[in-house]
Length: 497
Image (cartoon, rainbow, N blue to C red; front, side, top):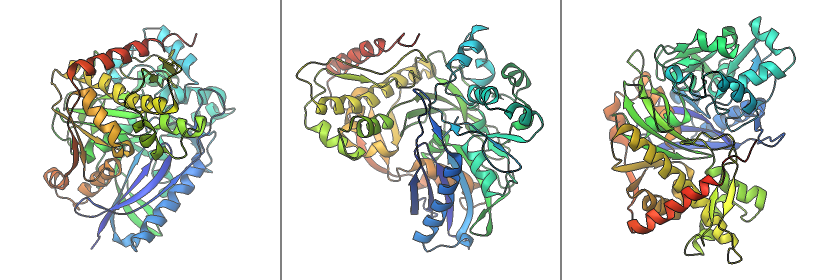
C-alpha cells in the first residue's frame, strides 16, 4: 500500500521534492538551488539542463531521507515557476537556448510593438492578461526571432515549447509526455480562458507555430498525463499546477472569496472567483485557479508582485549587508521604524496593479541619519506595502472586503514582516501549520486523482493554523505610511525611455 504522494516543486531559485503523508504532513524533503544567469541588465536566464539534473537529485535525496522506495509513492505532482519559457529539440532533448525566466524584461520592444495595435489589453477578453514581458508568448517570440534555425525547426515540428512543468514531465517520462495544465497554459498569453485551448487568433498574432505547443490537461487527473520514471519504477503523474495556483489549492481556498498570498521570490495573491472568469478593472490578472478532472474549471483573480524575497537576496548578494537572507530580520529590528526610507524594488518594472514596464527601482527619503538597518527595514516593508496595493485592487474588483489573509512561503517565518503586514492591511494574517503549501497543493492535486485523498473536505480537514498576527497599528499611522509609500511609487515611473 502506497504511503506517500510526492511533489516536485521546481521554483525560481531552487528545485525540491517533498513526500507528504495522508495527514498532509511533509515526511521528507530535499532541495537544491540552481544558478541565476544575468547576461545583461534586465535579462534573467536558467540553465534547463542544470534544473533537470537538480530534479533527479532532489527526488533521490527525498526518497533516501524517508528511507522510501518508488513503490511507496501513490502518485507524483509537479508545481513550477510559471511563465519561464524554454524550447528544446524533441530528438536530442537539448535546449536551443537557456530558459527565459518570468522576471526577464528583454521583450519590452516586442511588447511595445504588439501593444501599438489595440493597446496592452487587446487580448484581455480571451486571456485575462495584458501584453507584458511577464508572460511566455513574448519570450517565445524573442527566441523564435533570435535563435538561429529555431523557427524552421519549430515549423517542422522538431522544436518543443514548454514551461518548467512541461520540461520536467517530458524528461521524467523519457519524452513521452509533452503536456501542461490549464493553470500554466493560462499564463502564456496563448490560451483562451473560455475554451481552455490554444487560440488560433492569438497564435497568428504572435506568429507561433501550433506544433511547438504542449497538450493542455486538467490540473488533477488520473489518466491525462501517464506515468513518469522514478527510480526505475513507473509512477502515475496525476497533478500539475503553476506554483501560485498550487498554493491556492494547498491553502484549501476552494470556495469563491477565499484568498491566499505567497511570499517567495515575488509575491502572489489569489482569490477564488468560482466558475466565473472575472475581468479586473484594477490591474489584476484573470487566471485559471485549477481544474479537477472533467469538472468545470475554477477561476481566480491574481495580483502579481515581481520582487519581494528576491529583494532580500539582493541585499545579500549585491550589497553584501547581510550574510544570509535570514539575517535581515535582526538587522531591521535594530531600529524602531524605517527612518523615512521607502524602497520600491521595480527591478523588472512594476507588476500589479500598475503594469509599468518603464519603472525601475528607487530608494527614497535618504538622509545622513539613515543606516543599513533602515534600508533593511524598508526592504521588508516593501513586501507589505505592495501586498496592500494588491489587496485594495482585489477588494475593488470583487466588492468583498477581506476578513483575513492566509499566507505561505519562506518569508512568513519573518515575524517582523508578518506583524507589519497585518498592521498595514488592517486585517489578521494567518499562517498554516504546513507553510510549504505550493508543494502541498501539487501533492493534493495528484493524490486526489488516485484516491489517496477522497475529496476536498478531507483536504480541508488537514488544514490547521500555526500562527495569527492581528493588526496593532493605529489607523492614522497606517494611512500615513501607506500614503508615503504611494508617493514613493510615483518616483519609479518613466525611468526607461
